[in-house]
Length: 260
Length: 176
Image 1: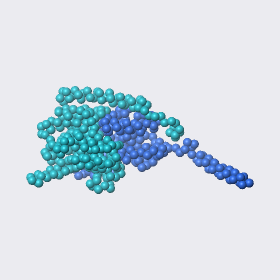
Image 2: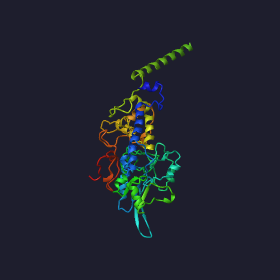
Image 3: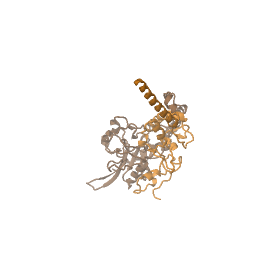
Image 4: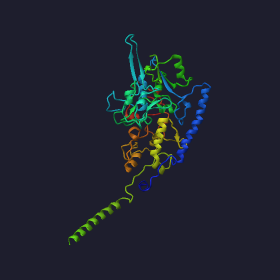
Protein backbone atom coordinates (compact mmCIF):
# COMPACT_ATOMS: atom_id res chain seq x y z
CA UNK A 1 0.00 0.00 0.00
CA UNK A 2 2.79 2.38 0.88
CA UNK A 3 4.62 1.69 -2.33
CA UNK A 4 1.46 2.49 -4.24
CA UNK A 5 1.10 5.86 -2.67
CA UNK A 6 4.71 6.90 -2.79
CA UNK A 7 6.14 5.57 -5.99
CA UNK A 8 3.40 5.25 -8.53
CA UNK A 9 2.50 8.24 -10.55
CA UNK A 10 -0.79 9.54 -9.30
CA UNK A 11 -3.32 9.30 -12.09
CA UNK A 12 -5.06 12.58 -12.66
CA UNK A 13 -8.73 12.24 -11.96
CA UNK A 14 -10.69 13.85 -14.71
CA UNK A 15 -14.40 13.69 -15.21
CA UNK A 16 -13.84 11.16 -17.98
CA UNK A 17 -11.94 8.88 -15.67
CA UNK A 18 -14.36 8.93 -12.78
CA UNK A 19 -15.48 5.38 -12.82
CA UNK A 20 -18.42 3.85 -14.54
CA UNK A 21 -20.49 3.47 -11.41
CA UNK A 22 -20.21 7.19 -10.78
CA UNK A 23 -21.30 7.85 -14.35
CA UNK A 24 -24.25 5.49 -13.94
CA UNK A 25 -25.11 7.29 -10.76
CA UNK A 26 -25.20 10.65 -12.50
CA UNK A 27 -27.10 9.52 -15.57
CA UNK A 28 -29.38 7.39 -13.45
CA UNK A 29 -30.37 10.50 -11.53
CA UNK A 30 -31.18 12.40 -14.70
CA UNK A 31 -33.37 9.61 -16.01
CA UNK A 32 -35.23 9.30 -12.74
CA UNK A 33 -35.77 13.05 -12.62
CA UNK A 34 -37.46 12.92 -16.00
CA UNK A 35 -39.82 10.21 -14.81
CA UNK A 36 -40.78 11.95 -11.62
CA UNK A 37 -41.21 15.38 -13.12
CA UNK A 38 -43.82 14.14 -15.55
CA UNK A 39 -46.48 13.06 -13.01
CA UNK A 40 -45.82 16.29 -11.11
CA UNK A 41 -46.70 18.30 -14.19
CA UNK A 42 -49.77 16.21 -14.86
CA UNK A 43 -50.98 16.65 -11.31
CA UNK A 44 -50.59 20.36 -11.70
CA UNK A 45 -52.67 20.38 -14.86
CA UNK A 46 -55.48 18.38 -13.33
CA UNK A 47 -55.51 20.91 -10.50
CA UNK A 48 -54.46 18.56 -7.73
CA UNK A 49 -52.11 19.83 -5.08
CA UNK A 50 -48.55 18.65 -5.35
CA UNK A 51 -47.53 17.06 -2.11
CA UNK A 52 -44.13 16.64 -0.55
CA UNK A 53 -44.07 12.99 -1.56
CA UNK A 54 -44.14 13.96 -5.22
CA UNK A 55 -40.60 15.20 -4.89
CA UNK A 56 -37.92 12.65 -5.40
CA UNK A 57 -34.63 12.43 -3.57
CA UNK A 58 -32.90 12.17 -6.91
CA UNK A 59 -34.45 15.32 -8.22
CA UNK A 60 -32.63 18.61 -7.82
CA UNK A 61 -34.49 21.37 -6.02
CA UNK A 62 -36.91 22.79 -8.57
CA UNK A 63 -37.41 26.47 -9.30
CA UNK A 64 -41.09 25.73 -9.96
CA UNK A 65 -41.53 25.28 -6.24
CA UNK A 66 -41.27 27.93 -3.58
CA UNK A 67 -41.47 26.52 -0.10
CA UNK A 68 -43.11 28.77 2.43
CA UNK A 69 -44.73 28.83 5.83
CA UNK A 70 -47.84 30.45 7.25
CA UNK A 71 -47.69 31.00 10.99
CA UNK A 72 -51.05 31.39 12.69
CA UNK A 73 -50.37 33.57 15.71
CA UNK A 74 -54.02 33.54 16.75
CA UNK A 75 -53.73 29.91 17.77
CA UNK A 76 -52.77 29.37 21.38
CA UNK A 77 -49.57 27.44 20.83
CA UNK A 78 -46.49 27.27 22.98
CA UNK A 79 -43.93 28.27 20.40
CA UNK A 80 -41.18 26.94 22.64
CA UNK A 81 -42.33 23.51 21.56
CA UNK A 82 -41.29 24.42 18.03
CA UNK A 83 -37.98 25.73 19.30
CA UNK A 84 -37.37 22.48 21.11
CA UNK A 85 -38.18 20.43 18.04
CA UNK A 86 -35.82 22.64 16.04
CA UNK A 87 -33.06 22.27 18.60
CA UNK A 88 -33.49 18.53 18.58
CA UNK A 89 -33.52 18.23 14.80
CA UNK A 90 -30.41 20.32 14.31
CA UNK A 91 -28.60 19.45 17.53
CA UNK A 92 -28.58 23.05 18.71
CA UNK A 93 -27.96 24.39 22.18
CA UNK A 94 -24.90 22.20 22.73
CA UNK A 95 -22.50 25.10 23.26
CA UNK A 96 -20.71 24.87 26.58
CA UNK A 97 -18.67 28.07 26.73
CA UNK A 98 -20.81 30.60 24.87
CA UNK A 99 -22.95 33.22 26.58
CA UNK A 100 -26.70 32.83 26.12
CA UNK A 101 -26.78 35.64 23.59
CA UNK A 102 -24.03 33.95 21.59
CA UNK A 103 -25.72 30.58 21.40
CA UNK A 104 -27.25 29.56 18.11
CA UNK A 105 -30.96 30.11 17.67
CA UNK A 106 -32.75 29.13 14.52
CA UNK A 107 -36.13 30.21 15.92
CA UNK A 108 -36.58 33.11 18.32
CA UNK A 109 -39.85 33.54 20.18
CA UNK A 110 -40.64 37.25 20.12
CA UNK A 111 -43.17 38.72 22.55
CA UNK A 112 -44.87 41.88 21.38
CA UNK A 113 -47.33 44.16 23.15
CA UNK A 114 -49.41 46.99 21.85
CA UNK A 115 -49.17 49.61 24.58
CA UNK A 116 -52.28 51.36 23.33
CA UNK A 117 -54.60 48.40 23.51
CA UNK A 118 -52.64 46.23 25.90
CA UNK A 119 -52.92 43.33 23.50
CA UNK A 120 -49.90 41.06 23.65
CA UNK A 121 -48.85 38.02 21.70
CA UNK A 122 -45.82 35.99 20.82
CA UNK A 123 -44.63 34.74 17.50
CA UNK A 124 -41.79 32.57 16.28
CA UNK A 125 -39.30 34.40 14.09
CA UNK A 126 -36.89 32.34 12.06
CA UNK A 127 -35.11 32.91 8.76
CA UNK A 128 -37.80 34.38 6.53
CA UNK A 129 -36.30 32.88 3.37
CA UNK A 130 -36.54 36.12 1.39
CA UNK A 131 -36.88 36.08 -2.36
CA UNK A 132 -34.23 38.80 -2.62
CA UNK A 133 -32.22 37.92 0.42
CA UNK A 134 -29.78 40.56 1.68
CA UNK A 135 -27.58 37.87 3.25
CA UNK A 136 -27.06 36.32 -0.18
CA UNK A 137 -26.29 39.71 -1.71
CA UNK A 138 -23.58 40.63 0.76
CA UNK A 139 -21.82 37.27 1.11
CA UNK A 140 -18.27 37.64 -0.26
CA UNK A 141 -17.74 33.91 -0.89
CA UNK A 142 -21.09 32.67 -2.17
CA UNK A 143 -21.61 30.65 0.99
CA UNK A 144 -24.88 32.33 1.82
CA UNK A 145 -27.11 31.05 -0.93
CA UNK A 146 -30.66 30.55 -2.11
CA UNK A 147 -31.63 27.15 -3.39
CA UNK A 148 -33.75 26.89 -6.53
CA UNK A 149 -36.83 26.17 -4.42
CA UNK A 150 -36.41 29.38 -2.42
CA UNK A 151 -34.73 28.02 0.69
CA UNK A 152 -31.98 30.31 1.96
CA UNK A 153 -29.13 28.51 3.64
CA UNK A 154 -25.41 28.64 4.40
CA UNK A 155 -22.94 26.45 2.53
CA UNK A 156 -20.52 25.91 5.39
CA UNK A 157 -17.92 24.57 2.98
CA UNK A 158 -17.54 28.11 1.71
CA UNK A 159 -18.37 30.18 4.80
CA UNK A 160 -15.39 32.10 6.16
CA UNK A 161 -17.26 33.43 9.17
CA UNK A 162 -17.08 37.12 8.27
CA UNK A 163 -20.62 37.70 9.58
CA UNK A 164 -21.61 40.22 6.92
CA UNK A 165 -24.86 38.29 6.48
CA UNK A 166 -25.66 38.69 10.17
CA UNK A 167 -25.32 42.44 9.73
CA UNK A 168 -27.42 42.46 6.59
CA UNK A 169 -30.31 40.36 7.88
CA UNK A 170 -33.17 42.59 9.06
CA UNK A 171 -34.72 39.69 10.98
CA UNK A 172 -31.71 38.90 13.17
CA UNK A 173 -32.11 35.35 11.98
CA UNK A 174 -28.50 34.28 11.85
CA UNK A 175 -26.12 33.06 14.51
CA UNK A 176 -22.40 32.48 14.63
CA UNK A 177 -20.75 29.48 16.23
CA UNK A 178 -18.10 30.72 18.63
CA UNK A 179 -16.66 27.47 19.90
CA UNK A 180 -15.57 24.01 18.92
CA UNK A 181 -18.58 21.73 18.80
CA UNK A 182 -18.91 18.00 19.01
CA UNK A 183 -21.84 15.59 18.81
CA UNK A 184 -23.54 17.28 15.91
CA UNK A 185 -26.53 15.55 14.41
CA UNK A 186 -25.73 13.67 11.25
CA UNK A 187 -28.16 15.73 9.18
CA UNK A 188 -26.96 19.15 10.31
CA UNK A 189 -23.19 19.47 10.30
CA UNK A 190 -22.22 22.63 12.16
CA UNK A 191 -19.03 23.92 13.65
CA UNK A 192 -16.90 26.76 14.91
CA UNK A 193 -16.36 29.75 12.66
CA UNK A 194 -19.45 29.42 10.52
CA UNK A 195 -22.64 31.42 10.40
CA UNK A 196 -25.85 29.42 10.43
CA UNK A 197 -29.58 29.86 10.42
CA UNK A 198 -32.87 28.09 9.86
CA UNK A 199 -32.61 26.08 6.65
CA UNK A 200 -36.29 25.11 6.66
CA UNK A 201 -35.04 21.59 7.49
CA UNK A 202 -33.83 20.95 3.92
CA UNK A 203 -32.83 17.45 4.85
CA UNK A 204 -36.39 16.68 5.92
CA UNK A 205 -37.97 18.41 2.92
CA UNK A 206 -35.75 16.46 0.54
CA UNK A 207 -36.87 13.31 2.32
CA UNK A 208 -40.54 14.22 1.97
CA UNK A 209 -41.08 15.42 5.54
CA UNK A 210 -42.28 18.74 6.85
CA UNK A 211 -39.90 20.93 8.87
CA UNK A 212 -39.55 19.99 12.53
CA UNK A 213 -41.23 23.16 13.85
CA UNK A 214 -44.22 22.62 11.56
CA UNK A 215 -44.66 19.10 12.83
CA UNK A 216 -44.40 20.22 16.46
CA UNK A 217 -46.77 23.16 16.08
CA UNK A 218 -50.15 21.38 16.18
CA UNK A 219 -50.92 22.76 12.74
CA UNK A 220 -50.38 26.35 13.82
CA UNK A 221 -47.69 26.55 11.15
CA UNK A 222 -48.70 25.50 7.67
CA UNK A 223 -45.94 24.50 5.32
CA UNK A 224 -46.22 24.16 1.56
CA UNK A 225 -45.55 25.33 -1.94
CA UNK A 226 -46.42 29.02 -2.42
CA UNK A 227 -46.28 28.63 -6.20
CA UNK A 228 -48.93 25.93 -6.30
CA UNK A 229 -52.40 27.54 -6.17
CA UNK A 230 -53.91 24.24 -5.03
CA UNK A 231 -51.66 23.80 -2.00
CA UNK A 232 -53.11 24.28 1.46
CA UNK A 233 -50.88 27.21 2.23
CA UNK A 234 -51.75 29.04 -0.99
CA UNK A 235 -55.47 28.50 -0.40
CA UNK A 236 -55.21 29.74 3.17
CA UNK A 237 -53.24 32.78 2.09
CA UNK A 238 -55.84 33.52 -0.57
CA UNK A 239 -58.68 33.18 1.87
CA UNK A 240 -57.30 34.78 5.03
CA UNK A 241 -54.37 36.79 3.78
CA UNK A 242 -51.09 36.85 5.59
CA UNK A 243 -48.55 39.41 6.56
CA UNK A 244 -44.85 39.37 5.96
CA UNK A 245 -42.74 40.97 8.66
CA UNK A 246 -41.13 44.20 7.46
CA UNK A 247 -42.87 43.91 4.10
CA UNK A 248 -41.79 47.52 3.52
CA UNK A 249 -38.28 46.26 2.79
CA UNK A 250 -39.67 44.52 -0.31
CA UNK A 251 -37.61 41.39 0.27
CA UNK A 252 -40.66 39.18 -0.28
CA UNK A 253 -40.10 36.62 2.49
CA UNK A 254 -41.55 33.11 2.20
CA UNK A 255 -42.77 33.18 5.79
CA UNK A 256 -46.21 34.69 6.31
CA UNK A 257 -47.96 35.46 9.58
CA UNK A 258 -51.66 35.41 10.27
CA UNK A 259 -53.04 37.60 13.05
CA UNK A 260 -50.28 40.17 13.43
CA UNK B 1 50.14 9.43 9.14
CA UNK B 2 47.54 12.08 9.89
CA UNK B 3 45.67 11.08 6.69
CA UNK B 4 45.76 7.48 7.84
CA UNK B 5 44.21 8.37 11.20
CA UNK B 6 41.48 10.37 9.51
CA UNK B 7 40.68 7.54 7.15
CA UNK B 8 40.59 5.08 10.01
CA UNK B 9 38.18 7.19 12.06
CA UNK B 10 35.96 7.70 9.03
CA UNK B 11 35.84 3.97 8.46
CA UNK B 12 34.91 3.32 12.08
CA UNK B 13 32.17 5.96 12.10
CA UNK B 14 30.67 4.71 8.87
CA UNK B 15 30.75 1.15 10.11
CA UNK B 16 28.89 2.14 13.28
CA UNK B 17 26.32 4.09 11.26
CA UNK B 18 25.78 1.24 8.85
CA UNK B 19 25.28 -1.28 11.60
CA UNK B 20 22.74 0.93 13.38
CA UNK B 21 20.83 1.42 10.12
CA UNK B 22 20.68 -2.24 9.45
CA UNK B 23 19.26 -2.86 12.91
CA UNK B 24 16.48 -0.34 12.19
CA UNK B 25 15.82 -2.02 8.87
CA UNK B 26 15.64 -5.37 10.56
CA UNK B 27 13.08 -4.19 13.12
CA UNK B 28 10.73 -2.87 10.43
CA UNK B 29 9.48 -4.07 7.14
CA UNK B 30 11.46 -2.76 4.22
CA UNK B 31 8.48 -0.57 3.25
CA UNK B 32 8.44 1.29 6.55
CA UNK B 33 5.79 1.28 9.27
CA UNK B 34 2.48 -0.27 8.38
CA UNK B 35 -1.07 0.71 9.20
CA UNK B 36 -3.93 -1.59 9.87
CA UNK B 37 -7.16 -0.63 8.19
CA UNK B 38 -10.12 -1.89 10.12
CA UNK B 39 -12.76 -3.81 8.21
CA UNK B 40 -16.03 -2.00 7.73
CA UNK B 41 -19.54 -3.24 8.32
CA UNK B 42 -20.87 -2.59 4.85
CA UNK B 43 -20.73 -5.31 2.22
CA UNK B 44 -19.62 -3.20 -0.70
CA UNK B 45 -18.54 0.38 -1.20
CA UNK B 46 -19.51 2.43 -4.23
CA UNK B 47 -16.08 1.82 -5.78
CA UNK B 48 -13.39 -0.81 -5.20
CA UNK B 49 -11.01 0.03 -2.31
CA UNK B 50 -8.06 1.03 -4.48
CA UNK B 51 -10.21 3.50 -6.39
CA UNK B 52 -11.80 4.81 -3.21
CA UNK B 53 -8.34 5.45 -1.76
CA UNK B 54 -7.49 7.78 -4.59
CA UNK B 55 -10.84 9.25 -5.47
CA UNK B 56 -12.75 9.71 -2.22
CA UNK B 57 -11.91 13.42 -1.90
CA UNK B 58 -13.23 14.13 -5.40
CA UNK B 59 -16.33 12.04 -4.86
CA UNK B 60 -17.09 13.80 -1.60
CA UNK B 61 -16.54 17.22 -3.13
CA UNK B 62 -18.86 16.39 -6.03
CA UNK B 63 -21.56 15.17 -3.71
CA UNK B 64 -21.38 18.08 -1.33
CA UNK B 65 -22.14 20.50 -4.15
CA UNK B 66 -24.90 18.32 -5.55
CA UNK B 67 -26.48 17.77 -2.16
CA UNK B 68 -26.23 21.14 -0.51
CA UNK B 69 -26.44 23.60 -3.35
CA UNK B 70 -28.64 21.70 -5.81
CA UNK B 71 -30.67 19.55 -3.47
CA UNK B 72 -29.90 16.20 -5.13
CA UNK B 73 -29.80 13.49 -2.52
CA UNK B 74 -29.59 10.53 -4.83
CA UNK B 75 -28.46 7.13 -3.69
CA UNK B 76 -25.22 6.12 -5.29
CA UNK B 77 -24.63 2.78 -6.94
CA UNK B 78 -28.00 1.26 -7.52
CA UNK B 79 -29.80 2.99 -4.72
CA UNK B 80 -28.33 1.05 -1.85
CA UNK B 81 -25.75 3.48 -0.60
CA UNK B 82 -26.02 7.14 0.16
CA UNK B 83 -23.24 9.05 -1.56
CA UNK B 84 -22.68 11.14 1.54
CA UNK B 85 -20.13 11.47 4.29
CA UNK B 86 -22.90 10.29 6.62
CA UNK B 87 -22.95 6.99 4.74
CA UNK B 88 -19.15 6.72 4.92
CA UNK B 89 -19.28 7.16 8.67
CA UNK B 90 -22.16 4.74 9.12
CA UNK B 91 -20.32 1.91 7.36
CA UNK B 92 -16.79 2.63 8.48
CA UNK B 93 -17.34 3.46 12.13
CA UNK B 94 -14.98 1.52 14.36
CA UNK B 95 -15.87 0.20 17.79
CA UNK B 96 -13.30 -0.08 20.53
CA UNK B 97 -12.86 -2.86 23.09
CA UNK B 98 -15.70 -1.56 25.23
CA UNK B 99 -18.02 -1.73 22.19
CA UNK B 100 -18.27 2.04 21.81
CA UNK B 101 -17.65 3.97 18.63
CA UNK B 102 -14.27 5.68 18.58
CA UNK B 103 -14.33 9.43 18.03
CA UNK B 104 -12.28 11.48 15.66
CA UNK B 105 -9.60 12.16 18.30
CA UNK B 106 -8.82 8.45 18.45
CA UNK B 107 -6.13 7.02 16.15
CA UNK B 108 -8.30 3.97 15.52
CA UNK B 109 -11.00 6.04 13.79
CA UNK B 110 -11.22 4.82 10.21
CA UNK B 111 -10.45 8.17 8.60
CA UNK B 112 -7.82 9.14 11.15
CA UNK B 113 -5.87 5.89 10.92
CA UNK B 114 -4.97 6.49 7.29
CA UNK B 115 -4.88 10.28 7.32
CA UNK B 116 -2.50 10.34 10.24
CA UNK B 117 -0.26 7.86 8.49
CA UNK B 118 -0.25 9.96 5.33
CA UNK B 119 0.08 13.21 7.33
CA UNK B 120 -2.95 14.77 5.65
CA UNK B 121 -5.19 16.69 8.02
CA UNK B 122 -8.97 16.43 7.66
CA UNK B 123 -11.36 19.24 8.55
CA UNK B 124 -14.58 17.39 7.73
CA UNK B 125 -15.32 16.42 11.29
CA UNK B 126 -15.09 19.90 12.72
CA UNK B 127 -18.67 20.14 11.50
CA UNK B 128 -19.71 16.65 10.43
CA UNK B 129 -20.63 13.97 12.90
CA UNK B 130 -17.75 11.53 13.35
CA UNK B 131 -19.72 8.49 14.54
CA UNK B 132 -23.13 7.09 13.59
CA UNK B 133 -26.19 8.46 15.31
CA UNK B 134 -27.73 6.30 17.99
CA UNK B 135 -26.06 3.56 19.91
CA UNK B 136 -27.52 0.57 18.11
CA UNK B 137 -26.19 -1.49 15.28
CA UNK B 138 -24.62 0.00 12.21
CA UNK B 139 -27.49 0.07 9.77
CA UNK B 140 -30.46 0.04 12.09
CA UNK B 141 -29.66 3.57 13.22
CA UNK B 142 -32.01 5.57 11.15
CA UNK B 143 -34.50 5.04 8.42
CA UNK B 144 -33.20 8.35 7.07
CA UNK B 145 -36.69 9.65 7.56
CA UNK B 146 -35.92 11.74 10.62
CA UNK B 147 -37.47 12.15 14.03
CA UNK B 148 -41.20 12.51 14.56
CA UNK B 149 -41.80 15.78 16.36
CA UNK B 150 -45.50 15.42 17.08
CA UNK B 151 -44.63 14.01 20.47
CA UNK B 152 -42.31 16.75 21.69
CA UNK B 153 -43.53 18.04 25.05
CA UNK B 154 -42.59 21.59 26.08
CA UNK B 155 -40.05 21.96 28.83
CA UNK B 156 -38.91 18.37 28.81
CA UNK B 157 -36.13 18.79 26.37
CA UNK B 158 -32.58 19.33 27.48
CA UNK B 159 -29.90 18.39 25.06
CA UNK B 160 -27.13 16.29 26.51
CA UNK B 161 -24.39 14.28 24.92
CA UNK B 162 -26.23 11.15 25.97
CA UNK B 163 -29.40 12.45 24.40
CA UNK B 164 -27.67 13.12 21.13
CA UNK B 165 -26.23 9.63 21.15
CA UNK B 166 -29.62 8.05 21.70
CA UNK B 167 -31.85 9.77 19.22
CA UNK B 168 -34.33 7.14 18.17
CA UNK B 169 -35.90 7.80 14.80
CA UNK B 170 -39.19 5.93 14.90
CA UNK B 171 -41.97 6.80 17.32
CA UNK B 172 -39.78 8.94 19.47
CA UNK B 173 -41.44 10.26 22.58
CA UNK B 174 -40.12 12.45 25.34
CA UNK B 175 -42.67 11.30 27.88
CA UNK B 176 -41.97 7.76 28.89
